[in-house]
Image 1 (cartoon, rainbow, N blue to C red):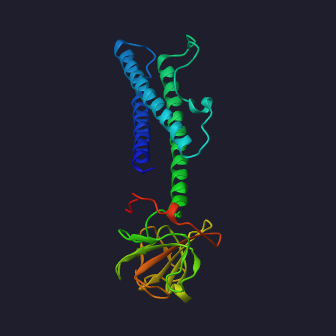
Image 2 (tube, rainbow, N blue to C red):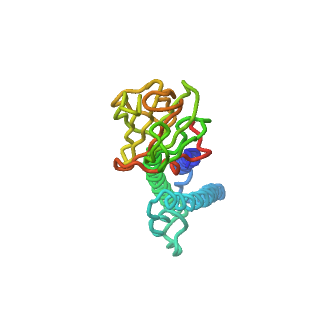
Image 3 (cartoon, helix red, strand yellow):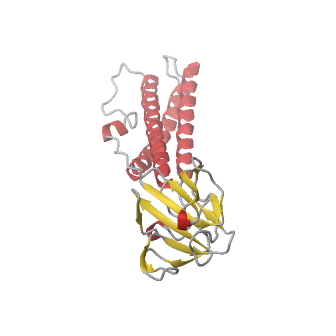
Amino acid sequence: MSFAPRSRIRASAVVLSCMVFAASSYMAGGRLVARSYRGHEFAQVASVRAQIASLTESINKLNDENAALRIAVGLAPLPSDVYKVGIGGRAAPWPEAVTPELDTWDRLDRLSRGVRLLKGSYRQVESRIRENEETLSRVPSITPVPGAVVNSRFGVRLHPIFGVKAMHEGMDFAAETGSPVLATADGVVTFAGKYGGYGNMIEIDHQNGLMTRYAHNHANHVQVGQRVTRGQVIGLVGATGITTSTHLHYEVRRDGVAIDPQPYVLPGVIVE
């Protein structure tokens, strides 16, 4: 979910607050406090009520949109009696002792409370969106070498050097020496150096039970303890360690066990 709708909604709530404040200030200016209701005073009351009606309609629309957003980000819907606080008119007729301006003040007060509740709900939605984005950012989802050809997949295969069947615990991406290697998700580097047959290898902990490895690198561009982000260049493709050609060996591990990386290499994912 992008931030554009969230920014637009937040701006709408601020505008509504300003409009309610302006209408309140207009009434507090003494134009609607007279006890004798001449024609122009009735007109002023009618004008403010028209603004209230327009604002109420806008807030009700935002309430509907907010309800949908809460469900989309996994938040429980607000109870209907809470959701509509401050919105709508009084159910019973006003007593004769209540003046039109007090009626209008009451409506403005309920409208202001409705705006405050709506803004509070939007803040909850924004917070949940940030949490969701942080969670998703730590899940591998892009190819580690853009434009590379996959020439070996996860599973049992005939080892290209030793000539025996062995488990291949990752995917191989064929590319020219020096091609950039990208971190496939946000995380912390837990290893960067030579690692037996892997040659120059980088290991990233994504802090959610998932870990990725990038092996046979020509060079590593990160250090242990460094935080990296999805799409960041962390090294260069090479042919170090036990290998017959220039390529990147890429692994995804869950709780330390190698799993098929294919589901984590999503086509069409663009790094901004």
